Every structure is written in C-alpha cells, then in structure tokens.
Length: 420
Image 1 (cartoon, rainbow, N blue to C red):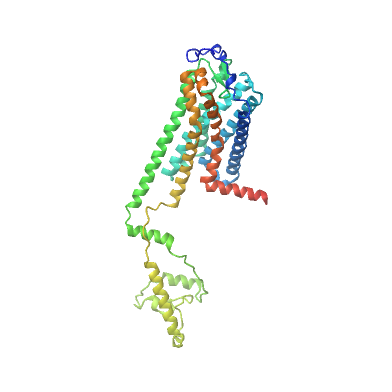
Image 2 (image 1 turned 30 degrees about the vertical axis):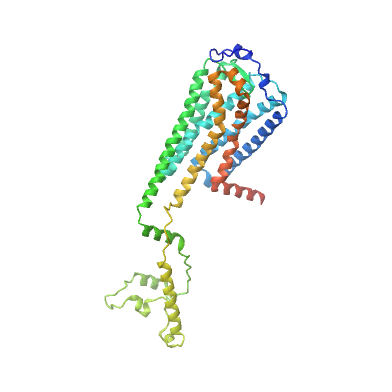
C-alpha cells in the first residue's frame, strides 16, 4: 500500500497509487441494501418536497416569505438527491470507479453546491422566524418578497463561489469510493475548505443568536402574564373558556327602527320624569320577556312565571360567580402559532445536524489523517455517513406535515379537490 502524503501534496500520483478496490463496498448483500436505501430516499424526498412546492404554489394563504424559504430548501433537497443517487447507483451496479472528468465532475459540483446552499439557507430561515415572532407588526414590512428573493440568491451565490474550483481548474480530481464522489485536490483545496468552514459556522451562529432572541421574547411574555394578579388571570381564563356560549333569540318588535334608535339615544333618567326608563312601560321593547301587559299579571300563572324568572336569574348569577383555579401562564393563540413555526424550523435544523454529523466527523478525520490512512480505518463508517446524510432530504416534509397544520390542511384540500 502506498504511503500517505495527501496532506503534504495536492497531486494525484500520491492518491492513485493507493489500492481502493477493497473499499468499494459494492458486493452483495451490502450493494442491494445500499441501492434500496438510495431508492427509498429518492422516492420519499422527491415526492415529499414536490408536495410542499405544489401546496405552497396553489394555496394563496401559504405564499409567505417563510414558506418561500422552506421551498428553496425543498428545491435544494431535490437537486441533492438527483445529483447524488444516479452516480451512486451506477457505481454500485457496475462496481467500477467513475471517471472524474466531464459530466461526473459537473454532477458532483452540483451536489456539493446544493448541499452547501442547504446549510446557508438556515441563516435566512432563522432571521425570518426572529422577525415573525419578535416583531410581528414590522414583519410584513421587513420580510418583503424582494428581500426574501435576495436572501435566497445570496445564499446560493455564496455556495456556488465556494464549490466551483473543480470546474475552473479541471483535472485535479480523483474518485473516492467510500464517499462515492470525485474529491478535489487542486491548489485551492485549503482555501475552499476554509470557506466551507465559514459557511457552516455563520449560519449556525446566526441560528443560535436568533433563537436566543426568540427565547427571550418568550420569557418576556411569561413575565408579563405573571405580573397579572391571580384573580384577574382566573377571570380572564374563565371568560375565555369556561362560560357557555350565549344564544340570542330575536323576537319581532312592535317598535319601528326609528323608535328603537330614539329609545337607545334616550338617557336612562329624564329631566321631566325621574323614573328610570327601564321601569316605564313604554321604555321597554316588546321583544323583551319582561314586557308583559299589566292585565296579564292578574292572571293566575303570572306569579309562577315571575318565580321561575327569578330562579333563572339566581342560577345565572351563581354561574357567573364561579371561578376556575389558575393553572399556569396563558399565552395568546397568535403567539403560540408563531412559537409552533419556530419550533418547526428548530426541528428542521436538528434533523439536518443529526443526519450530517457523522459525515462531517469522518470528513474532518479524513482531512486530518489523509485519505489513505482514514479510509483504511474508517472506510465502512465513511460509506455509512454518506448514506445516512441523505436522511435530511426527506425528513423536512415529514416535519412540515407534523408541525404545520396549514400546510397539512392545504395539501389535503388539494388532494380532495383533485379526487372530486
């Protein structure tokens, strides 16, 4: 086996002398398992992300800046699958290294570019959630369509500038079987790796800062609710949830519309007559239950009706006097909806970190030790990390369906409309 010198030189002779065939991992039954996994990721990722794109484009109320950023991430996931799965399938099927020139170099560059774009877009998504939660009144003025498109364009431009070196130089690539991609060994290798590190750290720092601000906003809401007295909070909770719905029964009135307006404008006590308007027989509407003629009170059932009416009034007063025990801080439904969307984005980032953490770990070790030494000891883990990283391409639509009722209901409405 050739000695490792890829850390000291950028030329191909040091890497092509190494025997890569034992690290193809293209023999049964591992080949079939990898092909099944690649096919499942492709079906789930393409179908799920296309469903998101179609739903957002067809449902008017879903066309928001936040959803536009999520659609950009969905497009990146689709291109990531389309640029990674076909070359991997060809390699596993034939068991021969791919030629790292022409088409395959372009495909690998597309794969690395959209992968880096998926990292860069985390920063605009976090900023969008920060404005949506912490400054909802200024959100529509801040996150406009133009600014959203500009953030998406800048994220893609930065990813493209970071990954175009293999296309500009050409020839300084060799096929790395455990990762199933053409690895770049040109003169700009160290500078590109530095740009990749910066492009990973900046979105992560931005996300941490934005979610720290969101957490402080949540604490501020909690402190504001804690300052309210327990009695007031119980009454607020009781009035919102405990009281039964009031049903209004309309009766025909003998008063004309003008008379009713005059009656409403009339003061409760008149200067000519100090009798309250509610006690005067002409001051009540005929639609009220108490507007009973005087002669009817001489009837035998008048006392029973009055007793029943007084009993209902007593029961109503008892119902209103009941208070519920305060069960904690109550947050407004609008703020809960905003926090739910922020939690969804946090789950997306967490799923991305979990799926790509093994890949970054073996890649850092490979850069530190050299390709030959790291492959000899970590070859199976490198292939596992490469396959496991595709989890991020179809996990996002699952999180959308679980955490976003509007997207889920909008998709089901489209399906029902097509079926009908």
